[in-house]
Amino acid sequence: MAEPTVRMSGIVLASLMFQHLNSDSDVEGLILGESRFDEHITISDSQADHIHIEETYNVQKHVDCHTLHHFYNNAGEVNVETLKKILADNKQDSVIGWYRQRRNTDQQMTLREKLVHENLKSALSNPHMIFVLLTPSKLTPAGSTHRMEYAAFISRSRQFLNVPVLVNNLGLLEQLAYWKVSAPCSAAGYNLTMKKHGSRFFCSSGLLREVNKVNEMNDALQSELQKACRDVEESERLLETLQLEVSALRRRVREKQQDRAGQDSADGPAEQKNNLLLHEAVRALFACAPLFHTQTLTPDAFPVPAGCCGSEQDDNSLSLLNPSRTNCQKRLKETPPERERKRRKSKS
Image: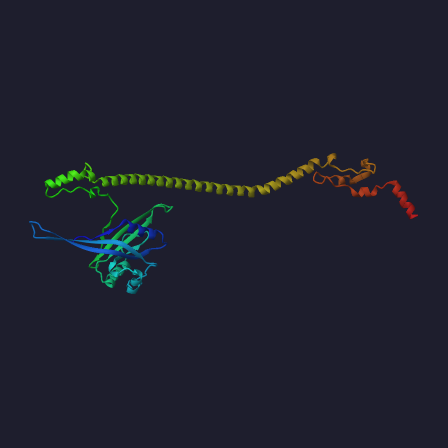
């Protein structure tokens, strides 16, 4: 018996990846499609006949579950009523398996997944069921590039085998998909017809004209795609470089702010101390300077001689910080003689 194979279109695989990357947790669901068993009989001289069976599973659609463990419980028992609600308009006969997507894990089935797989085969009465496992992982810190690994498993006598998955639109395109097939029995009428009408449909190389045009368009699309990929790669590298430079500048600004704050806290007491020392120096130098002293004046704006002040001259001297102070006591004592006569008359 031949090894089974799983065939999946690129659209279905891309939708599975897109669904998982847009979800915050693991994802699981059911796989819809068809399973086909083809029997090939080969007859040779060594043996009468040789029977070769090809087992193929074509994945056509997937139905996701809203939450994990939705159609089975913790013990792995499958709920058929929940399966019917998940399938909705789809038939149970179209279910060929189920899938699970786990982040940053190995490509191995867990014990619960094996138990659920066996119970699902019994619940749907389908011994040919597959299990598809997808394990994505991040490659870049920014999360712009992801790596997705996928594998399929099938059980045979309670043993799970890894089945290869073939994606239809991945790999090299067969350039010989269209070619001119020679007639098994060449006839004159066939040759005349091909010479008459073949120039309108076939090139000199034997390929269809439309095929050459399609190949040219495919080459142009591939070159544009490669150019776009190079542009995206260059922009990603430039973005990473700019992010590193911005991080370095922010770190330098933060260090400068911390150094400036430390200098301000250290220079504050020193500046106050310097101001006090300057104040004392000014008082010591200019305390005896006559320009910074106040003088007592008479009503006629003449300065009073120093002998009249006596020992109070020291009290009248002011520093540079209080130059506006005046001697009020001396002004009260010095009154003009005319005012004294008026006071005596009023007393008498």
